[in-house]
Image: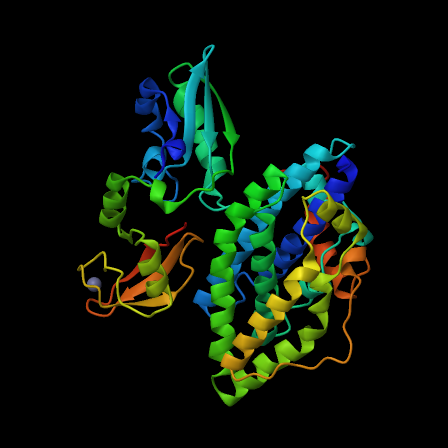
Length: 251
Length: 167
Ligand SMILES: [Zn+2]
C-alpha cells in the first residue's frame, strides 16, 4: 500500500479517538459526580494515548516531515475524518453515555480485527488498545443499564441520548477509498462485516436496559469524508488554540 | 509466562535500574513494574526498551527521563525506545512488587477471572489494604489513574485503590 494512502488510513482511525477524547476532556471537573468525572477523563487519557501511537506512526510515513503534533493540531476541518458520532456535544449525561456506548461497542469489534492486520505497528497498537477499550465498554454499558433501568427521569434521558445519536451509528460502517485499499492490502478492516454483530450487541444491551431500539428512518454520514456537523468547528477551535497561538509549542 | 516474553536485561545494569521508580507508585521500581523489556550496553551506550502500562500513561515520559538521569550519574548515556508489542500485562509485575504495592495501600491485581468478577461486583474478592477484609465494594471502575479502580471496605470504611488486572 502506498505510504500516503496508509497515512490517510491511519489518520482516519486515530481521528475518532482524538475527537472523542477531546469531548470527554471537556468534562474534566464538570462530571456529574467525582467518580464519573474521573472515569470519563481516564477514558479520554486512554484514547489520547492510543491516538498518539497512531499519529506517531502516521508522522513517520508523511512526506512533509510532520510530527505527531502537526497531525493532531494543524489540519483544517475538512482534513479530519472522524465519524460524526464522536463530535456530538456533551448535551447531558445521557448523551455522554450514549455516545460512549455506541462508540465503544464499535471500537472493540474494530480492534479485535485490527489485531490481525498485516501491518505490525497497527496490530501492536490494537493489541495494546483493546485491553483498555474492554474497560471503556464495560463502563459505558453498565451506565446504559443503570440509567435505562433506573428512575423515570434517568430512563427518559438515557433513551433521549440513544434516540438522538442513533442516526450516526450507520456511518461507523461506511467505507472510504483508503479503507477499501487497506482491506485489499490485508492491513485494513472490512467494516461492513462488523455491522451485524454491532447491532446485535447494542440491541441486546438496550433491551437489558429496558430501552427501546430506535427505528431511524434515515442515517447521517459525512465525517469520514471530512464533512462535519456544525459542532466540529467549535471543537477544533478549542483543540487547536494553543498550537495556533504559540506555534511549535510542545510539552 | 513463556520464555520469549522474559525481558533481556544485562545483569550489571540491574542495580541502576532499581534506583528508578514509578512516579505514581514510588515503592515500585521499573523492574518491579515489568516495563523494562530490554536493557543492554553497547559501545558505551545503554539501550533500553520501555513498554507502557497503558497507552496514555503520563508516567512513561517521566520514567524515560528518570532512566536517563540515573545512568547519567554513572557517566553513561541512554537511549530509550518505546515498544508496544507484546503489550504489557500485570503478569509482568514481580511478586515482590505486588507485596510492596499492597503495603503501600494499593490492592494488587487478582488473576483475570477473579478480577472480572470483582469489577462487575459479582463477588467480594478484593482485600482491604487497611484491615485485610474482603468485605469490600466497588465504588468506581476507574480510580485515581486509568490503571486503578476505586474500592471501599465495608468493615473498616477505608477507601482504597485496586490495581486492575490487564491481560
Ligand atoms: Zn478494611
